[in-house]
Length: 372
Ligand SMILES: NC(=O)C1=CN([C@@H]2O[C@H](COP(=O)(O)OP(=O)(O)OC[C@H]3O[C@@H](n4cnc5c(N)ncnc54)[C@H](O)[C@@H]3O)[C@@H](O)[C@H]2O)C=CC1
Ligand SMILES: CC(=O)C(=O)O
Ligand SMILES: [Mg+2]
Image (cartoon, rainbow, N blue to C red):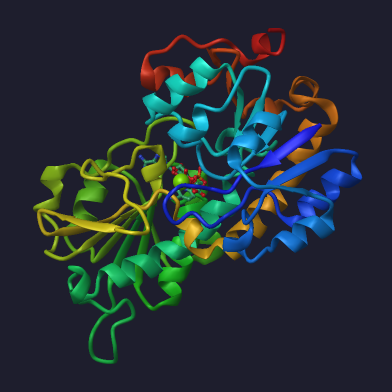
């Protein structure tokens, strides 16, 4: 198969869809791999690294999109990229379609077969291609929150760990999945007083068993969120209903109950955000203030630590890239229901129910799409 990997063009996105090691494996499997010149530089991989791995370096993204049977990326395709996708081509990348009707329409119009990293499943109810980036974003969230808490950034001027004689920051993490667990671990490591909320009692039991003593757990009711907001210095939004738009757990009116200069870090922003006042921001201009509360809502947080993130993502995507290339998308998805769970669009059909519900679009069952 001809596999192509263009340079990411989202603002300050330094990750790349294929590492040189991934290229080497694909080439060993008999595939032809094209990489856009310079695509790996932001992650510390030179063109020479890719050439040594067997890639053909290609000057333009246009040529990659035109010649590839499968395009492997990191972020959702931007408008200029979407215009180059076509029926019969496979796109393997993050999509986050539920809150993004423009992208959904363009992918459907193009006819492309789009498989979303974030909805590929594993046998244990996990999201193995989202998890590595959730680990990264989760660990970054307290770091960014601590920065936003500084006075010069509009924050309250609270130090995460406090000092002897002055108490630590209160950190509330809503959602105790992968992002939430990693955020809580790092915030606790910085010395903050951390509470994690989740709606899944088994998850709270697990967190209590493993981390009891390092942070507290609470069942995520509206009342518990409201109570904790009043004293929070930093709130991390880390909820997910897979593939669906994030539920809004903090409303604008709630901001008035918070301490002026408190910070909201909405990691769930790529699924629309779990705070009503969240809107996507970029690494260029990451924060804004509403009613005295600082918001950090960068939708591609792992791009900030591209070297770590690219390698972590590549470790998770490689087996699927190889399966798609070796067998073709139909056979690969027929053989692996967890990969089929990643299918979001095919030949002009939407094939993911949570996106259909979010946008009021009819959905073709992914199993039927295999026959199209
Ligand atoms: N902004 C960024 O750069 C990045 C964003 N993300 C996003 O972070 C979000 C979280 O991802 P993961 O941690 O991997 O998901 P996950 O599935 O591991 O965890 C989500 C947790 O939210 C819980 N939850 C659902 N509804 C809730 C509610 N009402 N109250 C409290 N908890 C609730 C679930 O029970 C689950 O434990 C996703 O939207 C993901 O796309 C992930 C990586 C990077
Ligand atoms: C998960 C995601 O959207 C990211 O890593 O940017
Ligand atoms: Mg994102």
